[in-house]
Image (cartoon, rainbow, N blue to C red; front, top):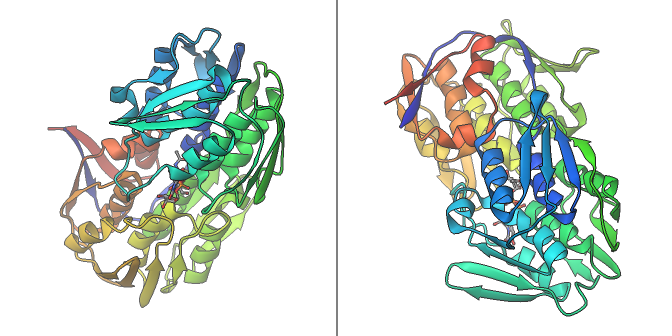
Length: 422
Ligand code: UD1
């Protein structure tokens, strides 16, 4: 099993080029199933989750070519089966995103129960309710879920989501592209990744309006064609590096990112005393010098609220500032697992339900800790950069699922991080 060894590193300085977004590329890849023509996706990050999605598409009969410079050519001309195997789906929860496109294209989809990060129960009831509203019959049996279109195909319908689930919005939107009539998704997720998916689908010939607002209208079309698209930059990776600059009291310039996508992170860092400025070259984050950084309270919410994926890295930062901060997690019910690990490093964080109170200004100490999920793992690396001694982080496969060239990028800005095989 591989581990990261992280040592106190001093202020991180330099430039970071942000990669294409993991959470955007996975639904884009799944959406290629809708067409029998080749699609080309650019700025595809090299990640384990992307590899799993490639394997899933290949297992369905697709042809995938990874070209130079992060271009992925996907051809789903032949769909040999509309079923995704357990061993692939269990490796990544987002595998479930193929369900909507498969159902739309083939009229039938069978997917084993999804796996992925252990950050709460993460049900899929909203996805299934959406497919049912479009007329599909849903069979949940043993370990699999099967959806079957009615005779004549799916039918457009108005669907109200009880919660603006990102995955459910993406899956229902994809399923509705080839449905008969018009679908409305109300209380839809508004994340930039939804907008990216809608833009890609529209390039393929879909007729989608309103992505990025709480109501998405999808007018069904008979067929879609191939398209080329560049993935949006990863706002969560950008947020992680913003916090790397902040926690180490460094100065970083982030390139290839959309400043609007990280507004809530910018706002909270500024409130704490960090300089965040948009320049011609990119987003500049400066926490250097003798400035006093102070506690801030935050609450995670669906976009455009504070992203749940940045809650844990932000909490690492809060352990290093003066005063007491309250962090409330409202999106996932079990996303405070990093608290126990940070406390093992000397942090003073108390939790009650979904609330954590962080008493800042502690000197963190290196310890043996576990990356309990993807973002929690990144949070522990950030803590390790300012902790005395060595922090040994295990289960780093979580981190490698979602951050491209993680050690390479961190080392380039001065982080003392090493990947070792045990
Ligand atoms: C996506 C992101 C993940 C991010 C999350 C919230 C991808 C691949 N992953 O995950 O990084 O943390 O959005 O921004 O894009 N829920 C239900 N029923 C459902 C679906 C979801 O109750 O059918 C609940 C979940 O348990 C969770 C909440 O809704 O509490 C949010 O989940 P959702 O927005 O669906 O997240 P994902 O799409 O899984």
